[in-house]
Image (cartoon, rainbow over all chains, first blue to last red; front, side, top):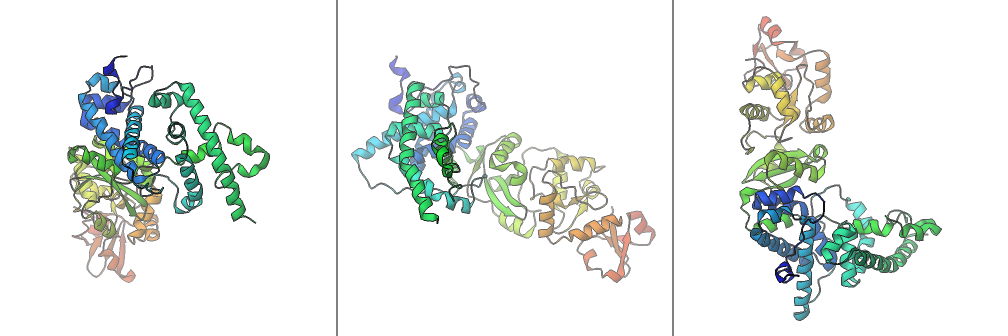
Length: 214
Length: 279
């Protein structure tokens, strides 16, 4: 494997459309007009990148900062790509590889410069898009807190796999591309992650019912 | 009370089976963690990347009597607007805006100056619009519709005349594809009997918007049933559109209904100079 093909150090991967899957409109747009394509990239995938980092890190502030870094790295990389390479991109998977690398770099740096961890919070300020109203959100708040905390307690690989598959809603094939490992490995990590989550969340759900009921 | 969180949890023996199913409760709970990015995140990214502000539009939500209105803008001018109910949510609005304006609409908190006041007062005529290069016909229709005062209604033929067009057909075509819902108040445009068309935004939204402007909706229907198109005053011998501020001041005793401008003219009445019922 040629060294130039591995750009992990810069956090910018080479996720290309090698299969028969259709290339996206956004990728075509990126090839035709980089700035216009980038605004679409941000519009379409800002939420996926942000949600991924939020669920991986548990911190809205970290998600904001690393999310911005992710897109800036993407923009810088795209400038250097020839149009045919931009056209072959699968934008979401490509962005999430950058996001995952940015997160790993952040963890490594943070381990060298420890600071107090930010508390887990919900970021609620967003345009309403059929998302649950205040009441529904209150009813869900308890599970969400338990679930987000339980997610953070998973080993990192399992956590990333579970978030990619079940929060972002990627296929196993896409998630495998992001994690750069075989599909079977992703399936195993997701399965183990879910089992762990069930152990934590299951009993908690019973406790809430008892507390509320009778 | 188990149902809200984990709908199948309370069903005892099935709990394990459903939990391991392809779309179990845990999976659904995880999917609900896919929350939209906070307002301003995407716009912050574009700013940090140094993308010139004229390359994209931002949009915001404004509350109206007909629910949420998405308003896209750029450089202080409105570039598009649609009711959430008609647009199919934020995603539908973003896609439609991209298709029409050719630029991405990015959610952000900023509101163009004067927008909130315009929505509150129902005065839209001076709100800056930037629709790019549009057909002259469309621009003329939108300008004419914007000139219909708050709380008043005008037939499509009136809009056509004000816009310098020959017939109302072109007016309806433009209003069906109104790129600036509510802010170009097409809910104030009616057919020749006085009943609203409500093209694009729908009758329910139109009714809510008209009621919020104190249009007497029941009376509009009643006048249409009587085929009363204009109201004259037998003290001034001036006739108006029935929703004109001057017409609303005529006491019932002095109101004279007309079915056409010709009928009013024959009776010796002249058209009102502010609502211009005839050329």
